[in-house]
Image 1: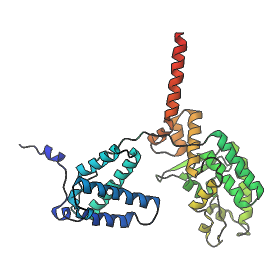
Image 2 (image 1 turned 60 degrees about the vertical axis):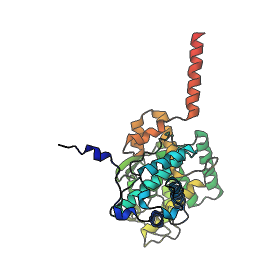
Image 3 (image 1 turned 90 degrees about the vertical axis):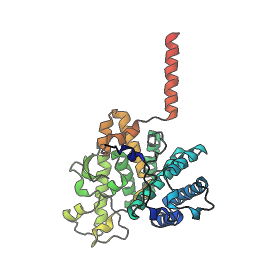
Image 4 (image 1 turned 45 degrees about the vertical axis):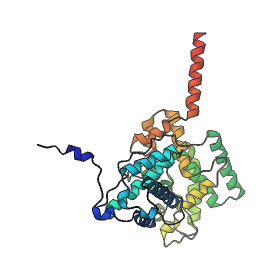
Length: 343
């Protein structure tokens, strides 16, 4: 009986009708849906597809880009684009991003155009060196905390107290910006040592520990929060309080719409960024700092994964990576020990 195994390794081709369609037109339609506007992602997708079409024109020896057909975009052309981009000195991370754009475009088109086959699906991206997420030093953390305290003392308003407490709780718990933004008061334990049932990115839930160092400032914030809410709710019931977020915004808020008291995602980022000293801050940088410090103190990667709410410990393993400078320093120390032992 004749075997058909060899056919599995033959490159799939688009349907004959699809093969003769103008590739430039199809790419333009893709960009209309996924790269509108002037945002960073839109500009990156437009640049990636422009670079690829320019390369493909040369590779297929077409007179102009408008002459390219869908059949001209195949596996070999995509692979050569990756190889050529690396050869001329483009950063591996940039090449990986360009390939990711092509893979996404191919996947979208294969879903929307009957008979279209994704030519980039099996092309492998360049392997990138895993880097440890950036964090800030203990000295800078102290400087940031001092700046936040000084900022509040200049004008002791509720918003400034809220922002300082937000900063301190992010550093204390490693919560994501979206997680801390949506926490309700009802999730806090009576002793203010746990935040119960925090929803993570993967639609899972976890309990988050609050250290004893955070208890006093958090309790003070809750007292001021209550006073602030009494301007809108003269008799604030426990049920209403429990339905409101822990970190509230009263700008444009109305007692008839409890959702109007939520902080917007931009407000969280803006509040944290205002405390920048040397490094430009954002909430996820504080999460990286929390994770790095916890790993250095505990040396327990699974403990850190649980504290961060990672579903896969391989995600947490990024924090164990070391930079080139650290590797070089360790090697120099090892060589010094070897020389000392021989002398």
